[in-house]
Length: 259
Image (tube, rainbow, N blue to C red):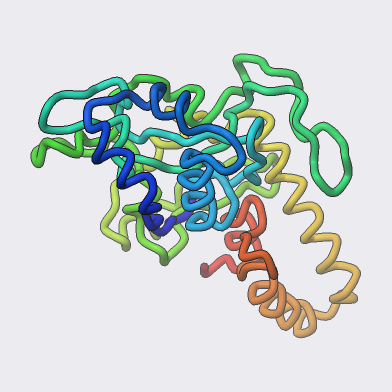
């Protein structure tokens, strides 16, 4: 999980909400779906702000089957003063959470996830209606898990195990950033960010990095350090389409132990 920037709300969605202040998210989706629909505009605004990766696990987002608009706080709650289902500030772009088994990697055409199972569910699909985040309408309420829009950009708060790809809180960095180590651990646990499928993806990223460093570094420490710096610039920026590389935090943590 990395910090994500808040997206800019599409004016068409602002206008629709003004005309339908008490409608549900489902009603909005039913009326505004389709290639040129307002729902697509909402989705693309979120996706762009996040660099094309899931706000929680950093898997590549592949709409329509491989992605969803995630409501941080419960979308089912709606009262005259606040409609959580249509609050753009309550939205993130997230992956399908391990609920689909026919998704394919765009570059290879291979399935990018195993068949759905309880052990491989993660992100929004396991969050469901849990009250883990602050109620936007109640000033005294607090987040119980890390909200990717609120965590610091630097330092990196995580380590990635080179043994099995596990995501682990970096307690020193977390405390230095003034964040809660306990909340970091709960974030990993509650969102199942160490589901086997995610560990496997992160381990594959590390394996590929190590292979590239070995081949190009030729066993020379200075050459390898220079290569790491070069890869940091290349891999942690955006490509020509403005997307970030999937599992961005894994790249960051592995290439630069000092973050």
